[in-house]
Image (cartoon, rainbow, N blue to C red; front, side, top):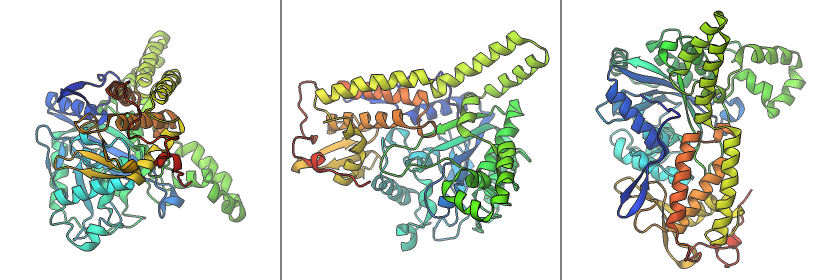
Length: 510
């Protein structure tokens, strides 16, 4: 069962070839997932994924984002055939798109959870940052290992419109919220039987058969009428946010479902930041580029749309994350309602404080984030004095420099590396927890990468920021990388602002 609890342990380090190895944030998540599955064989999870919007094609106008479904106990036998997961497997994500671009017009594919989120089977190999080069390497590895016989045409192999690529490393290009509830093995088996027996043929259209209607059907198979469209606020369409909102409200009214919200932040890097999902009227209400045309041609409708959105469609996934940090939060809120009805003020306050504490441990308090920013400033200043980095601005430019100067590779075990040749001297940097401290990696480059990652999340808004347990994992990794760099070494092959090397002349385009 996928359970991100605020009490999960801090990052664990293991000795590997006399160097520290850290469990990644997703590794901690999946560790808990496996533990829950083994300890509670009669229960598992289904979850609605609300993927933030990309600035591409129609999404630039609609801001609707994308929707998919997570299963903790259903795994892909193939991308188009389902089965119950075996011990140790991590579950899957299932979704449909305009066109997957494969050799047959499939409606849906299913991929392992870690592949969907980070493009790798082993969460220890997830990249620390994202570029299109890195994503392409991960996509090609997935195609070779999982799509044999399904993606042999040149269009599928090389076409950018082949949307099977969207199911490989989704967090490299957007943040994701996952709304999770309990299921039974009977429900999971019924879903498997249904989808394995029906033709997997694509009939996608943006109005009546899109990603949101696909998710609505699956969720309503588990819990009838739990996921519903909002035709008024979406002008007759069915959108991911409406399906997620209705499902969240249903789950909150059914404490036995144990609703919990999970957040996976978009990886830092050179890929454009995703934006929050919106309903149709919310997009008109909030979008500056659509407001002027509305004022000119439909000003009479604006008050109605604003009132409709304000009264019936307001839904903030980040707020839901804070309200549902664990599966017990919905039960606690039911107890709060009972305490209110009994005028038990003391009990009500105790329960409110409990939810607030769980929420604070999950997302962090303003004070806690401020303290990390102050501590990070000291680390950055120390790194400058040790000539690990030339200045603070370097951290903002590092990922773009690495993207332009380096070439990512993935070895036979799925471990990511970046090969660099600054000033004619070759360096190699591990791009994930499994390779960061491995023999052959440049320790100072590695420290710079982790500094830049922490710098990014400390500057990010809530919807783009890691949850606090994940950031604490990163912070422990940062401390380990700091110790791994020798204070007696000079900058070495890391380019400096006054060395005349690449960074001095590197001027990233705006």
